[in-house]
Amino acid sequence: MFKVISLSDAKSIVQSQFGHLRLSLESTILNNAIGRFLAKNIISDEFVPAFDRSTVDGYAVISRDLQGCSDSIPAILRKAGESQMGTMPAHRLQTGECFYVPTGGALPVGADAMVMIEFVEDFGAGDFAFVKPVAPGANMIFKGEDLQPGDQILPVGKQLNPADIGTLASMGMTSLEVFKRPQVSIISTGDELVSAGSELMPGKIRDVNTPMLAAMVEQAGAVTQTHEIVKDNRDLLRDAVTNALKTADVLMVSGGTSVGEHDNLPILIEELGEIFVHGIAIKPGKPTIIGKIDGKPVFGLPGNPVAAFFMFHSLVKPLLFSLSNNRSEQHQIKANLTRAVPSNHGREEVILVRLEGDQATPVPSKSGLISTVSKANGYFLIPRDREGLAAGDLVNIIPL
Image 1 (cartoon, rainbow, N blue to C red):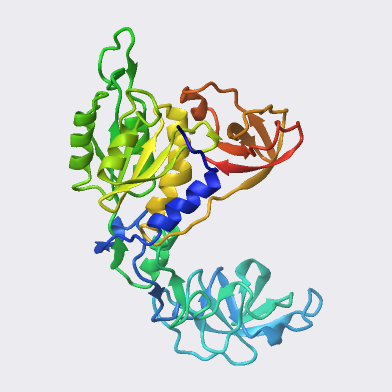
Image 2: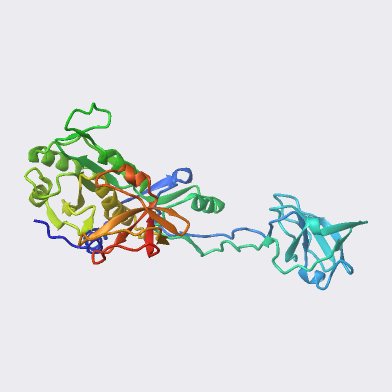
């Protein structure tokens, strides 16, 4: 019999049992670091930018020289030189002078603002007219405005995105320490299953969960280890599980998680290890198992592809991030329901939606039809004590 607990309690158990686990470290070159998790805090040891830098084509000035200027009474400044890209100006700007600087070029010492070239008139003989005051810091970036020595740039556990790669490149980094990618084994079980490329005979169904879960594992920054489909035979499943755990950091077994005669996984986990959870009060996903064998996390996911999808999203993915010291919270978006949604199951219910702006339209779905998830771009949970929600109700959408 199931002893169901809430999804939030299941998440807490995963954290308490496995939240201390961490992967070993390795070095990678910057060009291969996208999606990897930092193993150490990244601290700046230099100024970025290394000099006062212009963000426009125009003239460097001392801003107080333009105080009170206008179309009728322009400020007249004498051009003192030009900045060359890739070099530092040797001139120190004095009161009454301006200095041409291209976009990205270095400002001369003494300048504290840039004026776009469109707003400057050449009077000839080296004199230039400025007809509008400018604030200090306008159209420029000061030395060290982005980073200074000692600043923490990126924290340990951060999953690197393209902007992070650019930031690290700006510091001159070419390699860095990252956590190794988790090795995740996936085993699908069931006499009725055939692989995607096999002929579909009467009474058979294609294995959806192996390729789907493998894609989710890769998207989470981990490495997939897939196995042949295992028949509903305890000895065959024991061999598959023990072999998988020789190299895997995390094991997912799809199917055989309920309490029927052919559901072998619960008994097998208890024989080889320990079960912490067998049953979660949520639809879909009730027959989910959380356990461990040889100290490694083992998840028994329902054979229902939609249930497996959500249980991975809710339980396994956060653990994969935690193994690399990443504790990112699921991002949520508030939206209003476009129509009422009934629910009277006595357990939390996952509702798929199509989110457009601040409006969430529920996506009609039936148990096990993974194609319905493809039509959605988010979901929310109806609490177990609510008998549905009304049109216009505000809900917290978790993006997919």
